[in-house]
Length: 158
Image 1 (cartoon, rainbow, N blue to C red):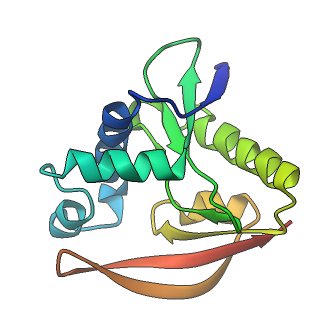
Image 2: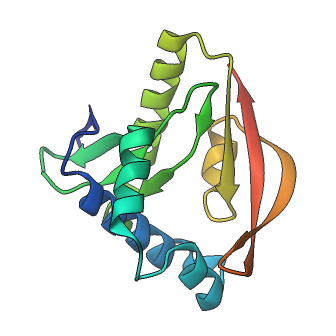
């Protein structure tokens, strides 16, 4: 069993978070999406300033495994209960990182008085969100760089 610690976002996390996002999309979501879809969703070339701004705005929670410094995963919880990003590094998939992050989001939601969580969930993450008590509200088709991606709007009442 791995020990997983979760901390708040801090300056300097932006690039490691981008690396986890890219690796997660290309290393895990590849089971459900085409190479063209993956490239549109998480292109190798990106605007690092825009990404850094989004991370500072989202204030994600960062997971580490066994006292390590590498980012094992990250997730955020926006006002109103929206989970904008929820990603685990492929090297840490299946080690309880996602469960620990989800539990942390539930604790945060309770502290904030949030009554429901909702997220736009990839086909790859849908089984995990379902197991965490979320239900599909609607199937969606979103466009990224002119490419259509399928996902689901999922909701959990707390």
